[in-house]
Length: 111
Ligand SMILES: [Zn+2]
Image (cartoon, rainbow, N blue to C red; front, side, top):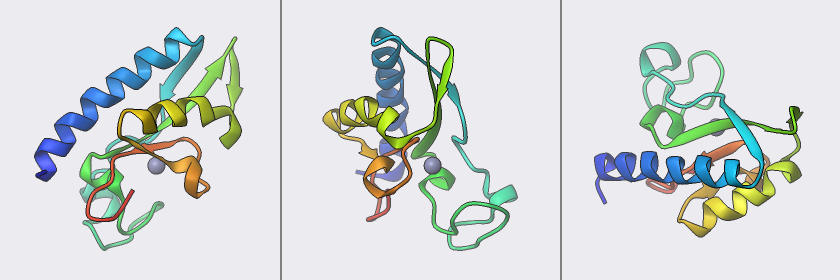
């Protein structure tokens, strides 16, 4: 699948994740979504925070801030229900590699 096709599929999957989360009683705010290479460096270049090779730079990752009943939930375990749902629709969940609020789509071996 081309990068562009993945990016468009990813956006649609994120919509499903958001709707599903709200149906379970969660609320979300966006953390990092797209990391503009003009700010964060092109792929392979580390500039500012974040990794040099990041799916955020390719529009294939979103970090979500998670809330339930107005409480900000920060633990990876808090994100697990969303992570399991995300994986069930084909996504990669950062909770599998110590980045619990990171929801991405695999591309060229990166998540
Ligand atoms: Zn992330």
